[in-house]
Image 1 (spheres, rainbow, N blue to C red):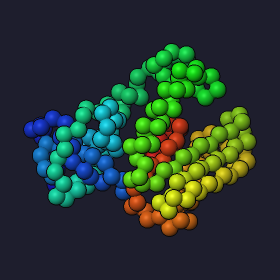
Image 2: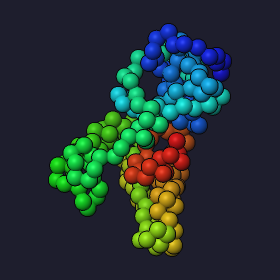
Image 3: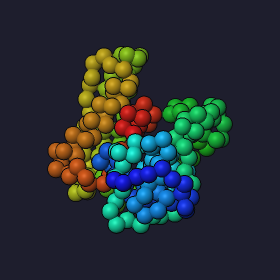
Image 4: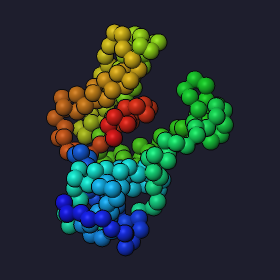
Length: 205
């Protein structure tokens, strides 16, 4: 992929691309010309407003041939997003935690989850994963539920013995991928993994 340092002609212009086998949008200064700063290109996994924007090494980003730049709403720097203070427990700005959230927070969480699933449903497989342990480390387990292209629902769980919560969360994602393999789902088939683990999301990203 040819790339050079430059100032964007059209700010917030994005072109479909591939990064680590995943479909993303890369910021460009013109068709086929990524915006490069310090050897890195801004990328985002979603087109929606406020999507997190990451910076990927230019040699790892491959712009989609023949694709035209698209004007997407402004995203949020992943660095800035992670630096934002989290909402205090009980405040209306956050969803709270399972078991302690208010009825209003629970309703907000359900609505937000429904919108997110609706964005993806019908365009790919949906994988829901979770892992936990009692104590950290401690007795741990993982589970996954996958809605497959055939319409069938696949489920898997695994007892891990003594492990950390991070190991449990990553194992749950592994279970989802195993279910897809067993079903014969192609590796390039679109889909989404839903995890509540910021650590697992960081590892995958």
